Structures are given as C-alpha cells and as structure tokens.
Amino acid sequence: MVTLTPSAPTESPVHQAAGGAPLLELRGISKTFPGVRALDDVSFPIWAGEIHMLCGENGAGKSSLMKVLCGAYVADAGEMFHNGGKIEIKSTLDARKLGIAVIFQEFSLIPYLSVAQNIFLGREFPGRIPGTIDRQKIRSEAARFLAMIGSDIDVDTPVHKLGVAQQQMVEIAKALSQNARVLVMDEPTSALSDTETEHLFGMMRRLKANGVAIVYISHRMAEVFLLGDRITILRDGKKVDTVLPNETSVSDLVQKMVGRKVDTIHRRGDNMKAGELALEVKGLNAPSGIADINLNVRAGEIVGLCGLVGSGRTEVARAIFGADRISSGQVTFFGKPFSGGPDEATRLGVGLIPESRKAQGLALIRSVGDNIVLAALDRLFPSRLFQPRTARKAADDMIQKLRIATPSARRAAQFLSGGNQQKVVVGKWLTADARLFIFDEPTRGIDVGAKAEVFALMYDLVEKGAAILMISSELSEIVNVCDRAYVMREGRIAGELPRDRLAEENILQLGMHHE
Figure 1 (cartoon, helix red, strand yellow):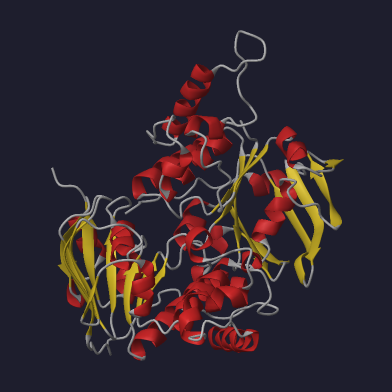
Figure 2 (cartoon, rainbow, N blue to C red; figure 1 turned 90 degrees about the horizontal axis):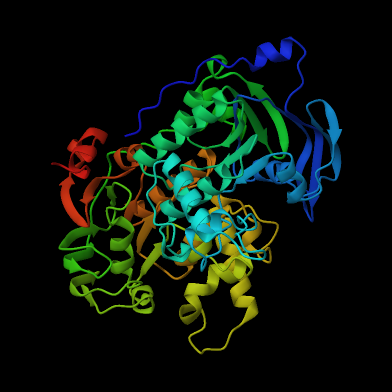
C-alpha cells in the first residue's frame, strides 16, 4: 500500500495576499457543445510551486477546462492571463510555447511507434547530418525521463505491446520531457502500482520545489488531501468552491462535488446468500503467463480477484471469458463446460466489463443504443432480421433502468462521462441476459458519485441472483465490497481470504513477493 506524506503547507495564499499574479489564470471561461454547457463562467488561477487539485464528478467540466487551458478547445467566452498579462491560447502549440503540458486520462500514444519515438514525437533531436535525427540521443533521453519516475521500460518496445500501467508511465515521461512550467495530470495513478505511484509523487514534489505548477485531477480522496495545496470543486460545469485541505473534510468535499451526501465506503451488508455454482475454474494455464488457476463463484456473491499490478488478474479474466487462448485447464459456467470464445461465453450468460472500457468495452463512435443491444442481437432478433423499433425499446428501457445520463439513445458513446460509459457496458450485458459478470477495475477513472452508483448496481445484480467476479487495485474496495477474495502473485493464486479474514494487510501479505 502506498504511504503518502502530506505536502508542506503551500505559500500560494501568502503570494495572493501580497498581490502577486498567478502563473496562469483563467477568468470567466464558458464552453458549450450541442445540447451541453460544459463550462459556465469558470475562473481558475494557477500558482507556481503548488499542487492544485481539481475535483468533481465525471461530466463536471474538469477535462473540458483543462482542454481549454492546453488549446485543444477554444473557449466561447472568458479571458486568460500569464503572469498578469492577457494572452490567447488557440492551439496546443500556443499552450506548449507557454510551458503547458497535459497528461490526459485517455492516452495519446501512437501504438506502432516505440516508447522513445512516442516520448519525443515532433521534438526529435537533429543528427549531425542535416535532415537526419539523432536516434541514440532520443533513446537515451527517453530512458532518462522514465528512470526519473522509477520505470525501466525498454525504450525500443512498440507501445501497443505495453500494458495500461506501462503506457501511463510513457505518457508521464512524455510530459516531463517537455520541461513544462504548468503540468496537468488527469488521474495519473489510476493504472499504476504502489511503487510506481510513490516514484510519481516524489517527482511531483521535486517539480513543485522547482516552481512548477501542477494541476492534478483525481477521484482518490487520499491523494487529494495528502498532495494538494488547494482544492477546486466543479459541478455541472460551474465552479462550486476553492478550499484548503485543512479547512474541509472528505464528506464535505464529496457533498460539494455531487450536491448530496454519498457513502464513500461502499460497504456490503452481511446478507449474502450463495446459490448455484456459476463459475468453476480448475487448473487453468495460459500463454499469457497465468498458471494453475483454481477458483469458483456462486450466484448471489461478489468474489474479489486482487494482487499487485502485473500479478495476472486481467489475464485470468480474459482467459475465463475466452478472449485469450488457454493451454490447459477447465472452465465451467453454470454446470456447462466451456470450450472457449467470447461468443460462446455470451451465449452461456457471461459478460466481461473490461479494464479499458473505451478500448475494449465500447464502440465509441456508435450510439449508446447500438452499444446496449450489441451483445444481445441473437436474443433480440432470432430471425436474423434487425428491427429498429425493438432495438430502440430495449435501449430506452436499459437507459431508464440504469439511469444513464444521456440526451437520447442516439448520443455517441464517446461523449458520455466515464461513469455513464461504465453503465452502458453493464447495460450491454444485462440486455444480453448475462448472469455472471466479470468486472475488471469497475471504478477506474470514475468519480465518487458514479462509484456509489456502480456498486449499488452490483449489489442489486447479486441480490437478484447474478454472480460477480470483481478485479480491483483499490484494496479498500475488495475489503468492503467482496464476500471473499482470491489473491494473485506472479500469475498464480497465492491464497483465498474468506469474509472474516478479508483485510488489506492480509491481501498485501499474500500478494507481495517473499524472499
């Protein structure tokens, strides 16, 4: 588990009192998209040498505000100032000239270029011969920036061969390599291990000490309070408040974010009643690196699958669902042997909510309605004749049932917030009559309000007889949500923890390497 040390008290309020100008300031920023007012008269000063936390629900306007700052969006109204002087940022090039670098939650890497090429894309070092580039310097500098955040990724590796956590490290190294004076980080730790997170936090503190301004977007309350010098809250595109960490509490902050009281613990009750065996895995081995996997899940229970990043959790989920090839072993769904393939798994009533909902769970350019009915085409249209009215009714019913915030079923899935996208993925499998749900990092990158809704949905599913296998890097989620859990280490099941032994220290003891 990451142990965080609170930041030293910020001096930025003193600077304000002394009349000093912010490094950057956004005043009265507004931005409207068709049918949505993303930002409404938002002012946001950024001071050198501070970590400014930006909080709010998914869809509150955080990413839109940062995209205006970095030139990806042009504001409809408002002004910007740099060291007190009025400026205009109309493109990402304008922002880069001002020393603004952004690490977005959704990666902007080129899959078939190497790590080194991605880090210095468009900023390559010239070679000795005119018209050439110095590839060796690109490689060595890329390795240097990765080492600064504790990563030893091979810089010659194509990015598409990296896992989500490693791609996140490449994005961070890419931003650091730009010698930014304002660094925006959008959920940078959502896919990182504890060790990688500690390296990142150490780097942030060094940057802060050197006068770099850091805007940090996070839904993790521990990070907000232990790293932040100031906290600004957005809700529905408007600025709600800016507070100091020692002047507020988690409950007050969450209430300002969502406009209501929210349970941030998500504790599951003790009324679990296990039913039929929904999933049984025996001796499962796969080329992906998992070996001798034995586990089971019954209807009516939520079973956790946890361990350190890289321990093989996602590989187990994909092998069970048939997305990855297995070399030996047996998987049984509801008493029926499974021979492999996502199509067969779907027919047997299994749904996979993957770690990367955007890359693997959704067809982003398709409508919400199309996504919802996608896995249920055989069930909805057994005659193989597509009927738009039937599809529209199924989609509308699911949107209403899950309270998906969308103007209509025709809205493209890419425009929904993270929490609502997650609901669409779940809705897809509910429409397909799934009875066993495999949730891989169900709350990654979504806000506290959306987390509460996702867990309430999961509880409702199991109470109605479904079975859930849940993967999470948040140990508190495993402890509070699951009825029992399997802990993985180096591609194997290191142990099983029943409800009465399900504690973070026991998970860590099983999951960490022992010399």
